[in-house]
Length: 128
Length: 206
Image (tube, rainbow over all chains, first blue to last red; front, top):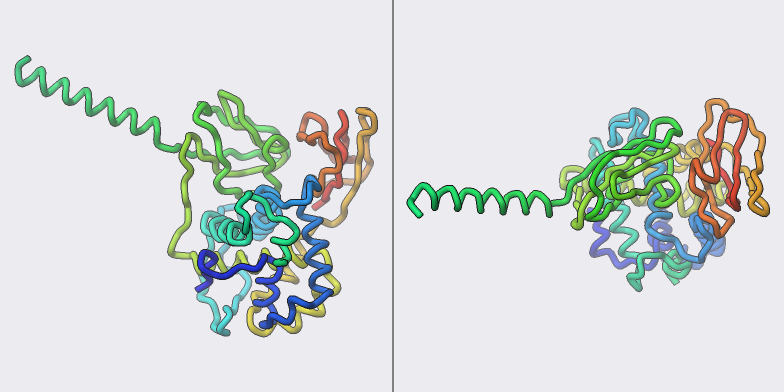
């Protein structure tokens, strides 16, 4: 189970990198660091050097909204790509509601917001 | 006071408490902007308004594409969301799909984190052997088809011509300190994007 509340977050970018290729060594990958910083800049809508929850939500939940072709507030069936979790097990098919998805994204955001100011700094984004 | 009178008083007190409870309890409403029209959803907002769940791919930015006054919540340019009306905020997490939701959240966050470097991401994607939701191909299909910078200099109206038939436009990044509020100092039609009153932004065309 992916539990954002108990996972030790080092930053959204690094956490995802570790999940993506399975090694903390990726944290040193300059290519990834550059991509993460470019993405941070792109997500910083008002360019104040921090990514707020609103800015983050619009980036991530916006994609959910695009995947939700029929606009019923949930992704189901062919709208949901096949998934394999960290252990290699195939995730059970089903639906994902916008409510649960938002709760998960919010939990990830909160876990990365180390100083609790409601925004992600570049360091919090990249895990430094 | 006889028995009946006491009963009525107690009943009224009970009803009063119920009414107080109803008043304090957070209400919700879904407000949707169809196409790019601004829509007002009448509601008493004196207890405050909080966007709890965004449903639309179109951005919902307070002061730009959603907001509220005393009598209504308004949404614009395709923003569709559920709003909590009142002091408390609702939680909508469901146990039934929480694992799938968490997995999808990680996937899409990952796509967003690496989205700005697609070529390099393609190389990396082949190495994803532990966690492989394979969102990348799909995600890249969802990105904007083009980005256009349109700027109002010295407060003047500026029209940036671009063919927007069958397209949608959203602000990708705001360049001005002035808040770009849809319908007030920016908007778009089939022929292009207009800005005024100091709004400067990079616009995403989908």
